[in-house]
Image (cartoon, rainbow, N blue to C red; front, side):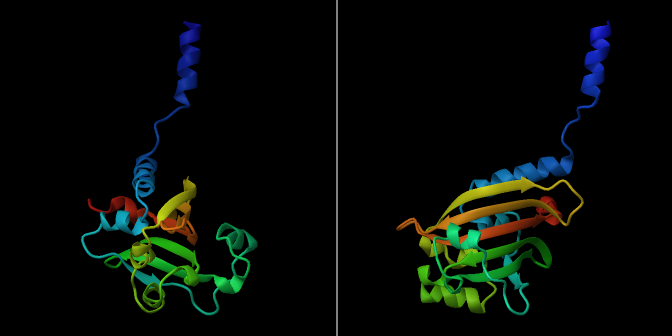
Length: 177
């Protein structure tokens, strides 16, 4: 009987993951199953996903880690695009896209510079592949529930075209309900 009480006491400290964590895990799996996060978010939204530029003023200089990950030497070879991806007026995520314009077509660069087109949609003709660097469910009291970091590579030659850092908001968990 003492063993049973001890076992129950130990199990009493265990609990099932919370509903938000389960939903975040499901979102994490959905995002990892496709090359394009935009395409995954679009499957959750009845209207076209669009971006809102966040970067104001002079963009930050890419770190040595970013340059190394993208296989470039010069910070001038990299551009950054910091945007919110929205479903209607609801922000689903914030995304930092550190990308190499030289590895994209002029049309892709023009689209990224002058439109509200999401990165994945703008560069889809590269037939990029996504290589997850990290994916973390955030359980602390933050505005975000999931952070993904990934390297996007051009299919034709496997050259890195972008390093993306994506922070997903809780509203994403309630999409389509």
